[in-house]
Image (cartoon, rainbow, N blue to C red; front, side, top):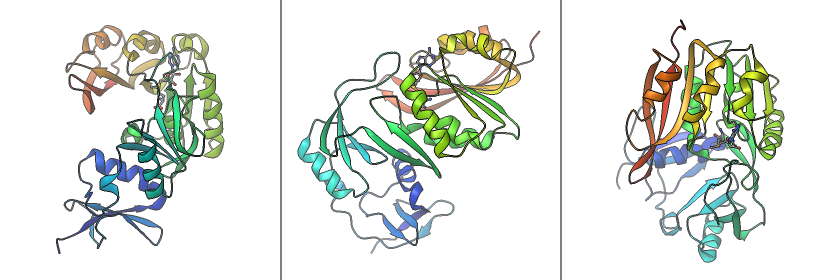
Length: 307
Ligand SMILES: C[S@@+](CC[C@H](N)C(=O)[O-])C[C@H]1O[C@@H](n2cnc3c(N)ncnc32)[C@H](O)[C@@H]1O
């Protein structure tokens, strides 16, 4: 029998950890994950720091499942495939609904429309990420679990007492994840449906220092002035760079701006960034490929002293 290795994570974090293992190409798909004493053991292809040996059953089911993404109890299939949806729900007891997106991400609110392929007719679910719970409604507001690792990366960089602004907060995944380590988080979105869910997510996670705000990011400086922030999150990948001038009055020397964008070449936004934040230190990281010619990148911008 070949050597079998696993990543051991608390069951509630299993979904996120499994997705990260897929993204990092380390998941051993030939073996079936299993639960043990409140932990999920995820089979990995080769050992890394902290991984353990474990024994797994061969995986015959997962291999045959149609491609899909799981968000809480909802699976979203890549194809309009009702039979495939039934198969997935049978293989994944944690999923209650299978959906197919009938539109791309669209409009100012960046939402999609869905068709129910199988299971309970709903687009609502509870999603777990690193010990936090979030209510999601995929038709009411944008949500993607793909930035779960990014949220952990930012959390690991935070200093005590930070004031954070999330200009495009959606249902609040960044504010909810960073809230307990921050002094204050202002979490803004234009979509009333997103802000209602965000309010609920703030309550669900017992956060008292996260302030939800319904507004256009262009006007934030007028609304929260004279406040300045230690960290500003800008996750509007199609247009975030356009909002840099709106972020400028809210930043000070040393502020870190995390700008997420879809780009086609390295350094694509550097000139825009330096025009708004002269002398800023820019670090660009690739998050994932988006199409054959474009990728999702994050620019970490450290604002320099003004004047
Ligand atoms: C890509 S989503 C990101 C949501 C959230 N940060 C996340 O990671 O799930 C972008 C969000 O920006 C919001 N949005 C779009 N234009 C906006 C604007 N001018 N001002 C404030 N929010 C805006 C949309 O409603 C949407 O929720």
